[in-house]
Image 1: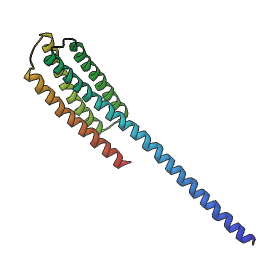
Image 2: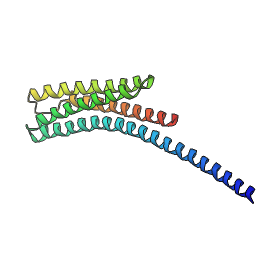
Image 3: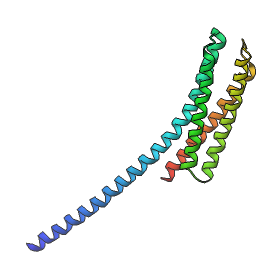
Image 4: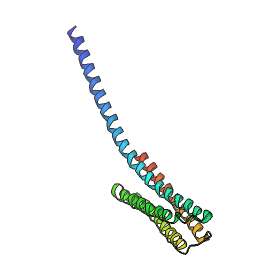
Length: 168
């Protein structure tokens, strides 16, 4: 009878040890996954904010030209200021968290977007300063070029996240 109790005790001890190790592994994996997801969401949020502010500037520019709403001038320029802040934040996040060839790929895409934002800001500011009354084709073309560069950045970020999740 005592052999039975001893055997049951050892089986229970093995089950408890196995359960403890398994639960620890699950908790560790969950914590690591949550950290990665938080970083990925930050990447996506900052990149979407760049697109959102440029879209806002386009809407306000339409209001300025179509409705002759001169109060939109400062609002349009503020959109570009916010875009610059989001670009800087995204760049610092990339350089802080990500290293290696993937970082360079992300930064190159971000530099392309930033370049188009600067061109767009210069063209819009010049048009507003000259009190233009009609749409400038060069501005519309630059908005399109920005969207193409942004789509490439967005694709690069999603590829990066997919690669990170596959490595996890």
